[in-house]
Image 1 (cartoon, rainbow, N blue to C red):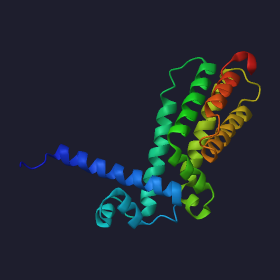
Image 2 (image 1 turned 60 degrees about the horizontal axis):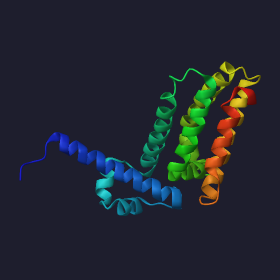
Image 3 (image 1 turned 90 degrees about the horizontal axis):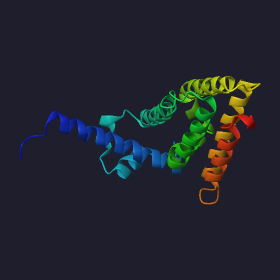
Length: 196
């Protein structure tokens, strides 16, 4: 058997790193950050604890990578819409994508909500989250201003608070919450000139 190429080794490293992050995210979402041990993450990922430490210096570094990856995914989702010129259509697409993402990545949103309730952990990531929230608010404010809304900043803050509330309810009542209907109502409300 011939030795692996550097490309194959890089692919294995990336796959192992992704497995660690997926395992940690699943456990953090269910057990919380403090309720999840490094041993549990390694066991869930089916690797040794030593190998896990080869990739991450500790639990907070794993959490940091999960948060940064999650926020980067959202930023990519938003940046991808920058080509949409009509502000109403842009808002409608952001609503669609945001709530679809919240539905498809339940573990990340469970973790996000739990971190808000853990001040000792939240403090380490507050600056990153607040910077992300501010840039998102600025984007929505610009879109509402371009749409001719009277109070664009307040409307942006309201819509983002609605996102948080809808996401929370969708997580709490996973099988019973009418997420698709709520998403369509928000698109109808914010994606049309006559309703603003």
